Image (cartoon, rainbow, N blue to C red; front, side, top):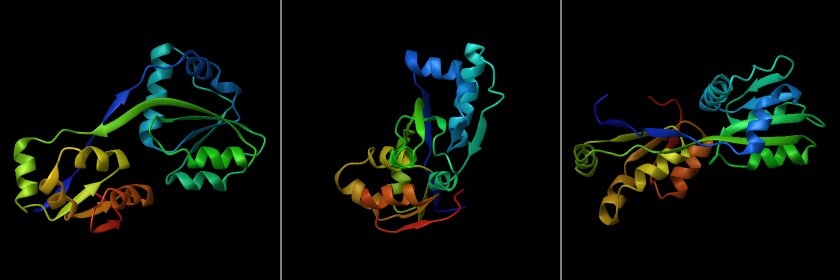
Length: 185
């Protein structure tokens, strides 16, 4: 729609440590494999195929979103493999460990804001955009990092619609003035 702008991110695959490769190779030894995003699941499957490792047959696969829904599962005394973004918050991992789960995190990828063209920046700074759509905290950081001084203040005043609570918190913490949550483009 006119006056709306979806802030995009770029995902980058990360090199894996030896211990992460070993965890992937032996992923069937875990009681559960947890995904809190479609990106994490896609990067996990890509790594398994690339390394010719078998998809675990006995492990239970849990996919949740938002992240906090993971705490609804009883994972006490369970071995949990948690493939995810390197920059994802650790709050859920800490909570799972506090509840007695053994959690092995595998950082598979990272995300950063996609660079804006000069035309896009001009459109934003000239007040032609009335609503920004953010799908991740890294999108918020990457977007705002492309502006300085008065320009940053201008884009912070544009209404921001965020996919969830974590992204909304990141937008507020970054100084966005009007933040709401809900479906994004």
